[in-house]
Amino acid sequence: MFIPDKTYCDAIVKECKDIIKKDFIIDDFEISCYYHNNIDYNSMLYYKSYELDGLTFVKDNSFVWGRFLMTHKIYYLNENDLVNANDILDGQIVNVTEIVDGETFIFVKLPNGKIIPKTKMSFDNKVCREVTKIVKHNRDLRVLVLGCMKNNLHPIFKYHNDNITLIAVRTQTGDYIDLKNVDFNIMKSRSYKINDEQSNLQYWIDYSKDKQNFIGWIIYFNDRMIKLKTNWHKIKQKNFS
Image (cartoon, rainbow, N blue to C red; front, side, top):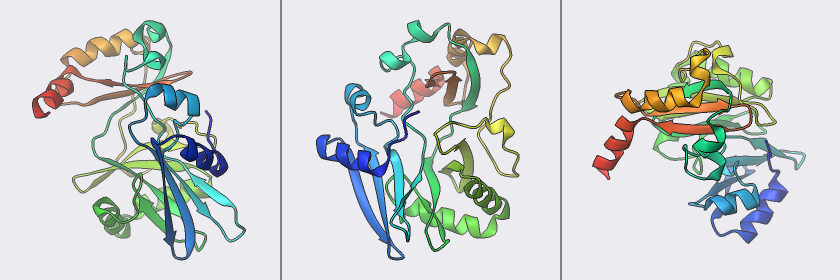
């Protein structure tokens, strides 16, 4: 997993118009956020910019840029060559989590110790304000976030209908921790125990044809991750488009 530093991010912002940088000053601390805006797959591959989907840097008192990860760009099955079903149909599935609706957000720690929420490119929108209110009354959430930061882990959440759901926890090197191993009293995306039948992609493709009232899954292989929508959700999206 390639996790770029700030120098690399600044360089590709100058080269690629579809990669956007936004700077902030919060409590006198410099913050930079990066986001890819409708970037095509070939450019994503060329610039190795999978992580620039809300990747955030905060300059500390030693002029070192601390890095905070969100989820990397994950493509839907058959969206491009990386996730072509013909190439991965025989791949070994190691984990599956449910896709959760809502807006993605993380927490960022400032050098003064303050911990604040941010969405991909904002610290001051409705989601951030609502999350700030929830945090004040949710001790379990505070304990989870503080514990992760103490151990150099990056928890990632979704906000939807006044609820907060943990969807991923990543290491400094970008690896994803199995949510079944995250034992906190907080709502989290369902993570499946994979049996022999479920370790095959065809099982999930068949399952997606009949599953109702459900968005889909993130499917983890040893060397990549994909998203798979249910037919029910595809029809729902088409009807509302």
